Length: 403
Image (tube, rainbow, N blue to C red; front, side):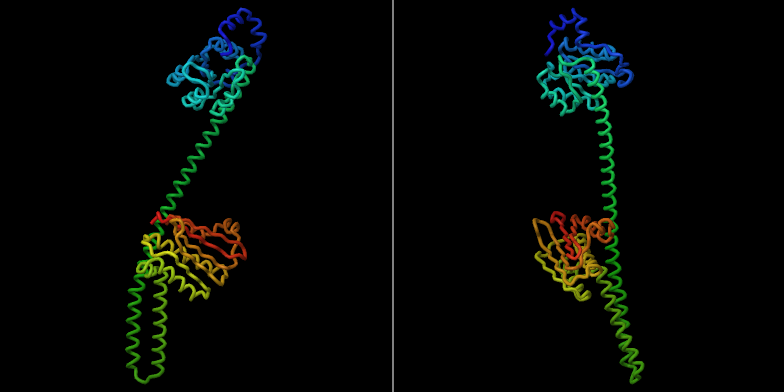
């Protein structure tokens, strides 16, 4: 310790010098009224009696009465004040105690007094230790033998203000953290609801497709057979036969429309032959209808996809092709379906006009948002890269772990 008991007693005998050189009387109303709450205390943790008495004198000079001071000579004595429920405004802590030494002293005190400002006492040649203490949560430090009451007052004011700011920031940070967690929880609920509604929608599509195919398809087939039967027995009434032939042609067109609508609602091939076959079929159908050259390169053997994942991948492929037909003005599309690092990767590249991704992001295009949400719901991610006059690349990545 910097002050020996003998030298302290000697200095007491010449008290005038002590007051002249160490403690200067102040007219300031003091910290007690402006910074410390009523019935609050300063906890002084110091095992050297000389240093302890000197700090007590300086505290009295800045209007901190002795009754507001709590004393401890060991770390354990200081910790005992936690259970005493004393209102402690600030802690003045020596780094060299009988039961703890150095930076561990600050760490331990901070664990037990998380919201109290801490001022550490350090020797003349131990500023490195003081800096380490600040990094561990102390607010300021005093150098023994080189501090007076004015310095002590300034340090206490700074420590209290700094800790108040830290506490406010911590509370604000905690509120932000809670808000983020709540937002994430709400988003997860919305995604779960969206997935549930998506499943309902797919189930309804399947039901409607089956009813259209089975009920309406059978009725149209029966109607066609009846018209054909009449046509055979109408004789040589040419006007009537022409009318009946027109009806047969219209019925055939309607049957084709029913099959197309039923297939678009829920392709039987997706359930019967699997995802790869469904993607290849969709690619061929798209090429026929749109007139756009569409190449499908498959490098994956058929895997046992779950129904939800297979449906999700198929719908994303379907919606991407639809968007290209509507907006891209493309002449060629190349789709690659492959396995990369235990991920299913579907890459769709078109040579269309592309778009400015910043503009689309600002508009929050519902179609793209819906596709990305659908990818998220099957455990994957959808990446879209585009630039004006440079085409568009859509990359769907689905980890095999989701299978």
